[in-house]
Amino acid sequence: MKPQYQRSQNMAKRSWIRRVLIILVFLIFGVAATFFGCNRIVPVFFRPMETREAAGLAAEDTEIEVFSSSLEIPWEIVFLPDGRVLVTERPGRLNVIGCGGGVYEIEDVVHRGEGGLLGMAIHPDFEQNNWLYLYFTTQDETGTINRVQRYVLDKQGLSEMTIIIDGIPGANIHNGGRMSFGPDGLLYITTGDAGLPELAQDQDSLAGKILRLTDEGEVPQDNPFDSPVYTYGHRNPQGIAWDEQDRLWSTEHGATARDELNLIEAGNNYGWPVIEGMQEEENMETPMAYSGTDYTWAPSGAEFFDGSIFFAGLRGSSIYQAVIPEDLADDIVVKSHFKDDFGRMRTVKAGPDGMFYILTSNRDGRGTPIQEDDRILRFDPGIF
Image (cartoon, rainbow, N blue to C red; front, side):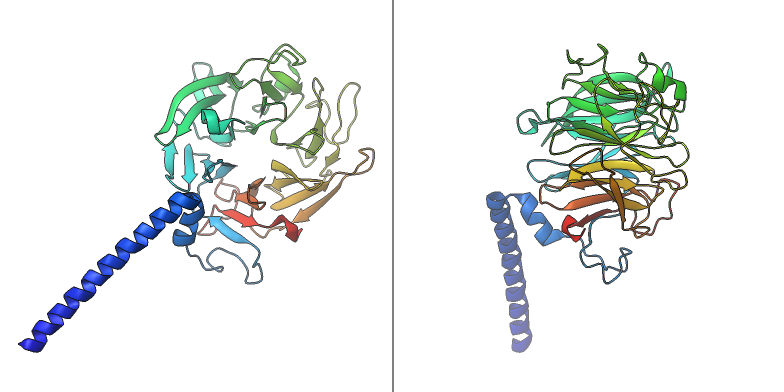
């Protein structure tokens, strides 16, 4: 009886020690998270473990990291000042990755065809006002439209919804949807022609345009048409980025190949549907680079980095790099990276850590997903 009693005592002692150790681990974690910021500590303790084979990565791709997986058609990614990461999914979900993370279902989103929850932007003064902007497809009494709404995103969640702009023509195709605040502090929004090409040339329509608004949705005094319209004649622009000279660039889907990289200037007409690709017409702009007549980029989200515009290719299943020459009269060289390695690419974005983040789009009905799709891939752009 005595040995059995001792064994019971030893088991109780070990159990007590385990409980103390668990408590100590959580105390250390809590102190570290408070001191360093939980978004720097959480990945160290709780980073999901995946084999490279399960993630669809070859063993030699050691520079590519799977940041997140099992997403459903992710469209946009932004980085909050506190280290959290926001990702939109087209069916209508906003994912918050990091401390206090979670998933928010956005009301009134209509996910049909290429429509749904698309672009996202945070206000330049997010640390003060917590303003988050979302672009999504919805329905009103006129039919399918796109809308931009502003929210307050804080520790309590989403609140204080405000409509910034409404009534952008929408459809199953060509909804545009990219948003970003420019160096001038104004909100730029790309819209597609909603499958009605003639709307792109109609300056009174919000379709087939790049729009420019204040953070409250008002028309800036120096807009060229005394309206939200900044430029027109676009088919389906899905990427915008500013270079080091604060010049605005946009990627645009062509009808059959003829995808475009455009230099955007206020008031200009970019030609659709009158011209496309390198065709010319008086008072209409030709692109700075295009995919040609036999090759399709299907270009989406764009980012300027180290002298190049990088943009994601859907049909092209690549990350493209357009090297911008000092003299824009010289040809722009476009390089392809990761061709067919990860399938369809929706967005490429530079993070505050200096790394690139790629969103795949293999579950959009046009790709061939693996089990872990869709994914966010992370890598050092220095590999280019």
